[in-house]
Structure formats: structure tokens, C-alpha cells
Length: 343
Image 1: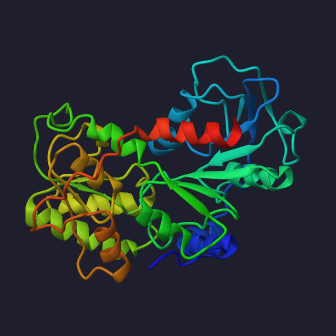
Image 2: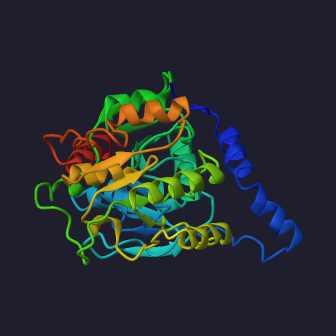
């Protein structure tokens, strides 16, 4: 099994848009303000950057995959982001909004690193890499389903595992890979045996919500969450993306069923056991030494394969074991590879 859209980014984007038909219809009936123009902020730290880092998100997974390795690099670097660049521990040389034409300041770039070319900054950076003849490097930042976006042509993938690399490549011969592990899971493993710190003494089972997921229908996700929470007296923790009207209606329905809905505790600070459909939080909890499971009625074949690839155990069986821990910290290994490519 592999990606549904192994190399066709246009087809992947069409699939993504098809998962938001209701939102499109609502906008057609009640048009709001149009989409905001994309902003591309180029921050340089050296006169002649050799490495360009494309940041499309400030999420913890993006920070772990891309920002943390930069703190270990002494290469001339530049960052392309939607706003001010994150703190890299050194003062920027220049910071300016740029268009889509290749800036003169990047003429010496020999490598571009990102989470992929499916978001605006990553897409533009990899377009520039093609014009420059630079190496495109992609760092895996999350667990992979068949609905993940394809890799850029000719990319060098820094993957969590060989299994993930083979899955993401999906038979492509233009992509090479190296296993570096996950910095996110490395951090989670630092608290193994001590339990994750928590601001609450509540050790009830927490159901990690995923109503934002495009891979499964919202109706099935809502039914699965409600059934599991009622059967196991679990607390439903909404995903941070569950802020739309339909999600809020579902949360209200849960409360009327007597289900506690509480998203006040950050995921990393949960102390008790967790369960979800296919959240990376299950692997994080297992890495912390906490009990963690997955559950979904009549799972499709791809979901069963996903659980197997990441060693996730179904509810009712033994808890998910901690993931393998690499000998070298992933951010250090990513930095080493980037130094080899752009040094």
C-alpha cells in the first residue's frame, strides 16, 4: 500500500478541495471576504545563503522537524515564512516581503528544505530549487496515510523509518531517502517512566478528537467518538482545528449525551491513558510510557495498515508499545544531512 496520489500534486489538491464541499456551498450562498493574498517573508542570516528553509506552519510538528535542526547548523541560511521567522538564536541580517521571482539574495542556494511542496512557501521554495538546480530536501513531520501529499520531484526524504519512506515514495525511483527518526517522538520519550506532567489529577481515559481529518467522513468520526466515550467514560479532547460550526454542534451533542468535552490541557501535558482513531498523539503517549490505543468500528484497509506500520494496538488489547528510539537525536541527524548537502 502507498499514496493514492504518488506524484500528482494537482490531483491531490483536487481531492483536498472535494473534502470541503459544504464549506464551498456555504460560501457560494453567503459570500464572505475573498482569500487573503499569500505572504512570503524572506529572512536572511548571512550575506550569501546556501540553505533555504521553507516554513509554512508554526505548529509543534513543524518546529520539531525544521526549526530545531537549524539551531545545530552554522551554515549560511535563509528562511521563507508567512510572517517573521522564528527565533534561531542569532540575529537576522535582512527581512523583507518578496514575490514569486527568485530573489538575487538566493542565487547561491544549493539546497532547499521543507515539509513538502504542497503548501505555498514549500511550493515556491521547491520551484526556486528547480530553477537553481538545488537539492530539494523534505523532512517528515507526521504519520502518513494514503492521502498524504506527494513528494517533490527528485527530493531527498528524511524519514521516520524505512517503512514510512517506502510508503511515501510509493514506488517512485526519483526520490532517495535516509532514516533520521522523529524529533517529536524523541521529545516525548524524554519523559518515559515519569509520566507526562499535568495540571490536573484527572487520569480518566482521554479520546483524542480528529473531526478535522479529511481521510474519513465526519459522520463516522463523530459516531465512533461518541460510542467509545460513552462505553469507557472517556473525556473527549477536541483537536485544536475543531472550531468550525459543525464541530461545535458535535461537541454540544456530546455534552447532551453526558460526555465531558475538555480541550484545556495541552496534549503534551496529559497524564492519563489516551485513545484515538489515528492520531500521532497515540504514539507520543506510548513514547512517554503511558497507555495508548486506537479504535474505529469497521476500519478501512488503509487504516488497519496504518495501525500496523506504527505499531498501534487496538482498544481491548495490550497498550501500544513505545516506538523504537534512534541512537542519534533526530534534529542532530537532520542537521548533519543538511550540512552534507549544503556545506
